[in-house]
Length: 424
Image (cartoon, rainbow, N blue to C red; front, side, top):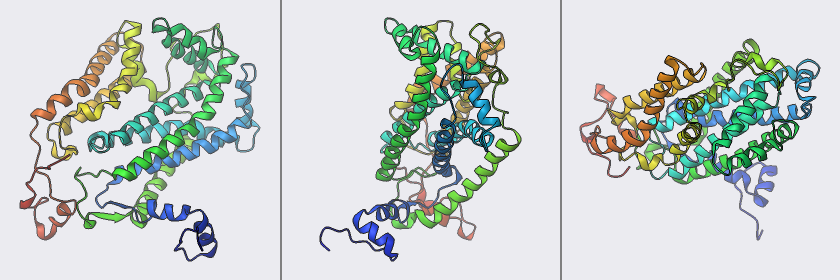
């Protein structure tokens, strides 16, 4: 029939829908027969895991919003009502509360995989930059969500973090007033944060759609960091990687369930079980664990404005990473120096997290300054210089060669594999 899309699905209902709205054809093309490199390892599962945990967070968040009261007089008690009186409210709340931590664990590993295997290099620069936008949106959403229970740490965390914008000359105080909706953290602030916390996950879905679209245009990177050269280097996404992703998702959900049922408050702060009191400041104001490295960077310098600039700069530097790394080789497997320095960077990031959990005094100040120095030096000094000086190992000619080279007890890379990659 003229004007209808030609559908090849045998099921009559699916065929009828697909001829008029070819959504099933699109899904088959993008997630069925879509060619993917045949040498993915389990680090490539974390993109799918991020999608799963985001859907869990949105669904549980909608149910929580049905019973939450965004009012400073009612917010804390409404959370207790959810935990005690709403059917399975405790399960929904603990899933949402710990889901934020699981989301950041998955995303941090996902980012590490991109750094280790050079997934930010040409032609995937925009794909990487959209990923950084996702990270920033996640941080904003998580921060606003942390304020909603209106406990002591929620209130004082909101006060400290929003006050950081006052460091910027001229516009700083106006930004703070805009965030507060007044002249202190109060009811208008809570209402604004609740509205934004509900909205931003859907914005996040839109950016993730662009992220996935950019991925399907450029194609996936792989552990070898070389381009796909023939159909023999690829496999259809389904069933090979849908099954592999399913294994990773099942393992992840088992770990997630163990946290929810056995250690639901392990990653929380006890002060948040106390109602917010503007007249009583906690002894230590500490953000959630996934913000601690950036909190340590903020406190590593005595100047407030410089500290705020460095904290935001630690994220902004990721945007320009594709142009800071001057090496033509993607994967750290073939970069003998870089593959150790990236682990030094990970260590610096972990040290910053530990320092952020302690008071800014004594050895913790020294450690945070050293780790902050390396954090920025890695991107701004080491990567540009290392790319010029490092002598990479020979690259295989194709993705298939390292696998086929194992037959008959042969070496991992054949003798013909000693050709440098002509383009990154």
